Image (cartoon, rainbow, N blue to C red; front, side):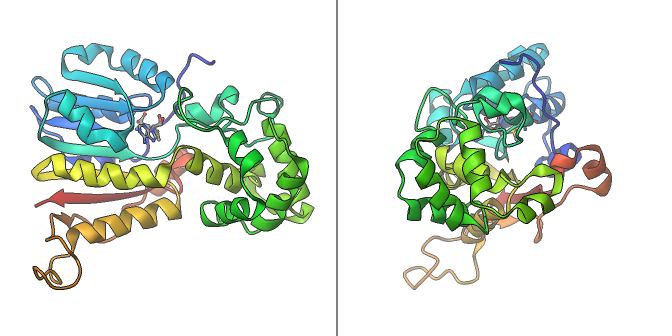
Length: 315
Ligand SMILES: C[S@@+](CC[C@H](N)C(=O)[O-])C[C@H]1O[C@@H](n2cnc3c(N)ncnc32)[C@H](O)[C@@H]1O
């Protein structure tokens, strides 16, 4: 495993602007990664604030512990899933927090560590990697379990729904033919066989396998399921006036965050006992539209291109 943690935090200025951490605040970073955003937050909540940093990946935890070592007294770092935010904070005996950040998806470090199986570029190191893709390699099914056991139709649906993959059916059919698939190379060969050469040639920066890899990664890590749990669970913990900032990198994720935020902020239709929504509004949107990275950030960090940041404020 590589020891250097490579990840450039996305929209750092906007995260601080909208989260608004103040001296003495308790802030949860539910996707700690290398601790980039966390260090910016910590600088602002000192000297008495507390940052609770959660990540399910042991490598991220180690990197963040190193990066945040100067803030030890003001940091609690937990290996866990932000979907369990309520349970994690109960164990820490914290019942209210001032802000929550969720910077969803995988880190560049995870993508660039071939052994993890996230890397879809056909580099020699990636090719021999196992089809794993678990953010926490200690639990759950691997991508190989899915491609080798799901029905062809189910795979096609997965690639279409979570990957927006135009050739979902032919790729699924090739996977079914070539089973068992064990390595990144096996999957890349199936994707190649299921897509026309012109499609791959047109793909910007050789990313023709990205959709299928993303769909598998999202399924392996139940990414959409935990977004719901994390946002709803997190909102219960926010104090009145506290903010939750969520960064997504893909339209499926962003649509889901938008829908959950909408459910939580509908007031005008609420009538106790009549129709939907069933609960009164508990939050308000801070910006109507999602915030995007600036052109200069995208030039500096092309991985930020698809990022969208949404903010909700607890009433
Ligand atoms: C985009 S990176 C975060 C980078 C971080 N904000 C920084 O500035 O360094 C996403 C991180 O969230 C973690 N992650 C994704 N889903 C998670 C979940 N449900 N629970 C806990 N950690 C999660 C990943 O392991 C990864 O380290």
